[in-house]
Length: 348
Ligand SMILES: C[S@@+](CC[C@H](N)C(=O)[O-])C[C@H]1O[C@@H](n2cnc3c(N)ncnc32)[C@H](O)[C@@H]1O
Figure 1 (spheres, protein in one colour):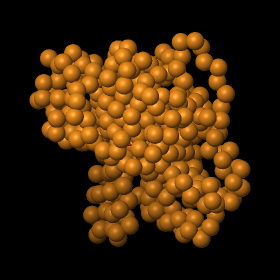
Figure 2 (cartoon, helix red, strand yellow):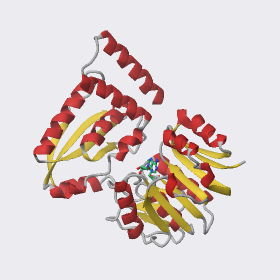
Figure 3 (tube, helix red, strand yellow):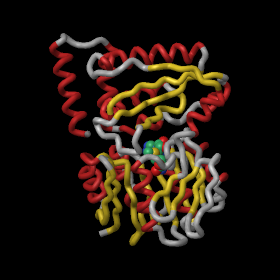
Figure 4 (tube, protein in one colour):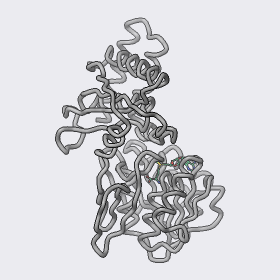
């Protein structure tokens, strides 16, 4: 899909040149298409939703049926404008292939602001439909209960690796004796467990975490990796995030998962982690990992310790490996899911 996007963007740019340029909104959409492809989950950050959400009584559901390729671009628009971001579903429990029919939905409060947002969504999708065939969005009104239910329908108990279970708070689950359960509700901060990078980090964590290890989780988001580390036997976990909303969400999740004695959540970044750790988790973007490598990220890994780095799109893997390598860390393992790569590094 990566190549298809790049080619399509080039093609669109040629069409725009031929047509003598675009207005600002059109240009913004092109920029957005590029961003969607490059930093898919930067858009996912906007899933952090406004806590005022509960104040609205009624909701508008916007939905569009598209193919897998257009689904990413429509999701970007919905992530930007909808409360709680975009929800994608296919009729089949299938990967998003370019030919699958995907329904992309989002929700807006049914008030004056919501109606303005509806117009923005319609405009953005109309502009997109000029360069890629798209049906107009459909809107339907929902009550608060319908809305909560519509969200909940999409989150289920999720099994990752051999022993990790992520469950939303409203679902019952009886774990096997060797399983660890992380209770997380969607929407508050990045890290619901649905993203392939989070899943690869959890799998690598499960394999490499030594009992009693001192762990750094840089860019903790919802706190999911820190909580998993604690429940898998870490001795202590320092969880940092430079987004205050993520810090709030992670603290609440650490508390509700019963691991506040092991996990400390603090606002900030590498400068707040002066010591060395047996395991460093950094699931941010490739660009950020490269910057952090130059600021001493690798020095936080103890001799014989490991780093799990993720958030890396396949094309950016070599750059990240080189940046870590420059500071002495060798890639000892690699995982890939779809376009996403996770690297495990250790000292040479
Ligand atoms: C992709 S999320 C990962 C969340 C979670 N660790 C997971 O694996 O699902 C990245 C998080 O890193 C945070 N972040 C981005 N740049 C950062 C930086 N330089 N220092 C600390 N946190 C950062 C973002 O706010 C976001 O919450």
